[in-house]
Image (tube, rainbow, N blue to C red; front, side, top):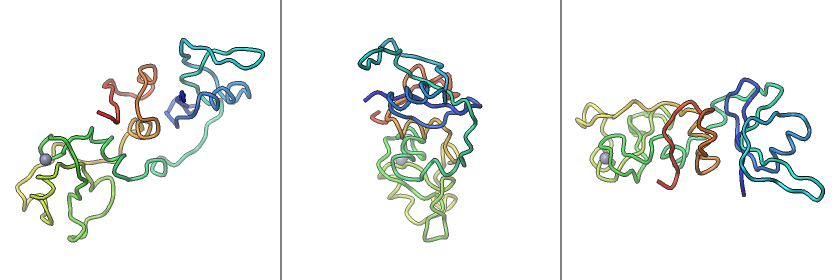
Length: 171
Ligand SMILES: [Zn+2]
């Protein structure tokens, strides 16, 4: 099933919906078409350009944090499936401040980690372990949310997501 990126009235990425849903937003004049694919979406009587990016005409207020659930898939997407200690392929989720030491299960305290680093760090604090983080973990950008929702980022969505590198969840 093809999907379309929905932007808020402010051009901030909001969500990913089915092409059919995006078409409904356009036909109901709730959204405007920004990018189309080269394909046509046909109904019985008419055919439409298949939408790829649409923008809502009216601003929708959505709490940013609420849209990005902290789970394994989302952490891996944020961290590019790389261990945040050594850069190897990540297989685990590691709490930087271990939960046993009062660390929170929060975006700022969770990183993707390879098995050896995860085992090496155990219930140590970062400074006790002598290990280093490649970058401090943070609440992910909108891009991660879109990636988790859709599985991949389409090239025509890139200009609206604010970064250049193209990534995929299957990488
Ligand atoms: Zn590692």
